[in-house]
Amino acid sequence: MAGLDIELAGIKLKNPVMVASGTFGYGQEASSFVDLDRLGAIVTKTISLKPRQGNPPPRICETAAGMLNSIGLQNNGVEDFINNALPFLSKFKTSVIANIAGESGKEYAELAKILNQQPLVKGLEVNISCPNVSRGGMFFCFDPKATFELVKMIRKATSLPLIVKLSPNVTDIALIAKQAEDAGADAVSLINTLQGMAIDIEMRKSKLGLATGGLSGPAIKPVAVRMVWQVFKTVKIPVIGIGGIMTGADAIEFFLAGASAVQVGTANFVDTQAPLRIVEEINAYLARNKIGHYKELIGQAKI
Ligand code: SIN
Image (cartoon, rainbow, N blue to C red; front, side, top):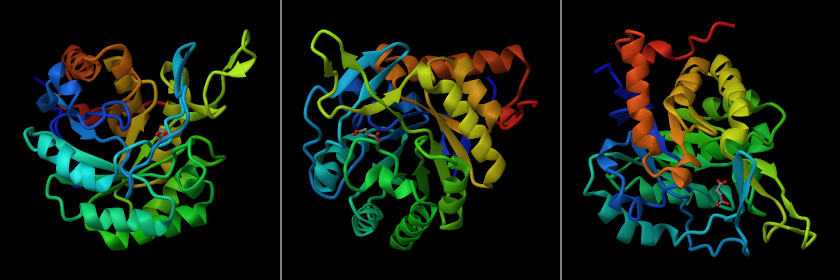
C-alpha cells in the first residue's frame, strides 16, 4: 500500500479524501452505509450560532453534469451540534472539521471561541463562500480587505487550525486566498459552488425557490482545477481541492494542480461509497505508477 496519510494544517488525516460540507450532514445518516472510520476527515454541514431555517423550497435541482442548491445554511445551531452531533461523532476515529458561518465577524469569532473548547473538533472550515444567503456568507470574500479583517478576527478567537473556504464567484481568487493567508489562515479550501440558475420552461419559473443557487458537480471541475492551480502558485499554506470530484482520477488531477487533499461533495448524492471508492482508486493509481506516497504528486503538473 502506498502512503496516503498527511498532517494538514496541523490536522491528522489517514488519507487525503474528506467529505465536503453540506453533502454529508454530521455523519449520522451516512453512517449506516459508509464506514466513517475510513474517511480522511468529516467536514460538517455549516454551523451557525443560532438555528437557521434555510431558504424556501425547492432547494435542489439537477442540471446537466451537476446540481444547483439553495439551502441557505439551514442548521440547528452550535448548541445542538455540541449536544447531539459531537457525541455521535466521538464514536469514530476520523478527524472532525467544523464548517462555520455567521452574519457578522462577531458571530464567526463567537462560534470559533465556542468550538475551541470542543476537543473533538480538530479544525474549523470558515465558510465565506455560501452564495445562498443575503448576509454574511459570500459577501466576506468579495472584498480582499473584508476577507483579511474577518480571518484576523477569527484567528484571535481560536487556536484551532483555520481552513478558509473560498468562492469561485470572484474576479481573482488567488488574491482572496493571499489575504486569508496573511490574516492567519492555516489552509484554504476551494471551490464552493458557482452561482447559477435553471428555469422550468413549462411553468416559466425558476426551478429554485430563491431564483438562484450554487452549481456543483462535474460541470465545475475544470474551473476548480484552474483555481486550485492559481491559488497553489500564490500561497504557501496547503490548498484543499473541491469541485466535481467523482473518481480517483479526478482527485489525482487536483493533487497535480497543487491540492494537498480533496473534498468529495456532490458525488455523495450519486454514490454513497464515492469517497471510499476514490481512496481505493487513488491507491490503484499510485501502485500502477510505483509512487510511494501520494504527496509526491502535489503540484507536479507540467505546464
Ligand atoms: C447552503 O447551505 O446554501 C449551501 C452551503 C454553501 O454553499 O456554503
